[in-house]
Amino acid sequence: MTSRWLDPIEDHAWRGYRRMFTLLEAQLTRDLAEDSDLSMADYTVLSNLVEAEDRRWRMTELADHMQWSQSRLSHQVKRMERRGLVAREQFEGDGRGAVVVLTDAGFEAIRVATPGHMKAVRKHMIDLLDEDQLATLADIADTVVAHLGE
Amino acid sequence: MTSRWLDPIEDHAWRGYRRMFTLLEAQLTRDLAEDSDLSMADYTVLSNLVEAEDRRWRMTELADHMQWSQSRLSHQVKRMERRGLVAREQFEGDGRGAVVVLTDAGFEAIRVATPGHMKAVRKHMIDLLDEDQLATLADIADTVVAHLGE
DNA sequence: TCGCAGTACTTGACGTATCATATAGTTGAG
DNA sequence: CTCAACTATATGATACGTCAAGTACTGCGA
Image (cartoon, rainbow over all chains, first blue to last red; front, side):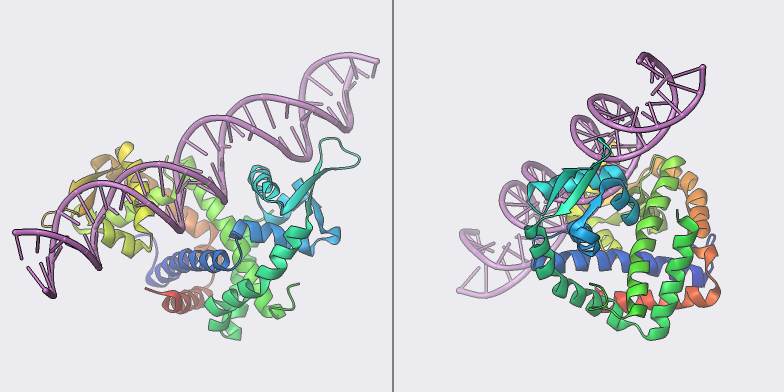
């Protein structure tokens, strides 16, 4: 059924991409869980907060930045709040607004987890590729993201 | 925090890849849901069954082939069975074995869904890339999959 | 042929993602 | 100044995915 829709090169690229991301996601999730008690979702939220000024971010803006739905972020933050990784504050100047803040525990959690996680990213993907491949991957991603994007 | 772990090209490739796959997955899921009542998981299972001889596959082998856990497949099949897309049969010759079979309804569902889905795959990814990029993407995927693989 | 280790699969609990809906605060037209 | 439309966020239902545990059958050594 495939050859009707994609030629061999396209098919190879598409199936390969699908398989790669399935496996990679599973592996990174496992590695991260092993030495950190964090899920990929936790890690993503925490790393964005760490990179932010003042370790805080307004809900909507963070959701946009991460390209998550507001609902997804809201649920995620609720779970993380329960575990003490983040806290919520009122946004000054707009009674509807909420701000997520990285707690000390959250900061500590990602500080500890990052070296291992980035090692895994290298091991399972980045270090397997040469510079041309990395550059092409970046191009591909930019192209696709620009098309879907914003 | 990034530059400590990845150089600029690596970082660009990595963040780009993550963003691409987040957006692409979401878009394909939405497109598929719009004209088919199928999730990506449904679609994947159905398309593997369609490609199989006799429209059937033993659980373990299908799970291996798709690189899914048995549990994941079992849950998915249960949900699909409930909707009449697949059926389960006993595996002859081993009382423990189970076989998933594509029903007529399941066949019809994927027959109808495939053109639109493949159009979306082209539109949001394949047709955006030139032949070199596709070939490189296939290489990258093969490399990563071989590393993680089997 | 007994019994136990191993294999095939299912189930339950829980975290995660989506959509639809609810709630509360804001803003602008009149 | 009021109210309807809009925005920011939260929540409930349900689908999805993982891990751990359970059930049931197989096969093999003693």
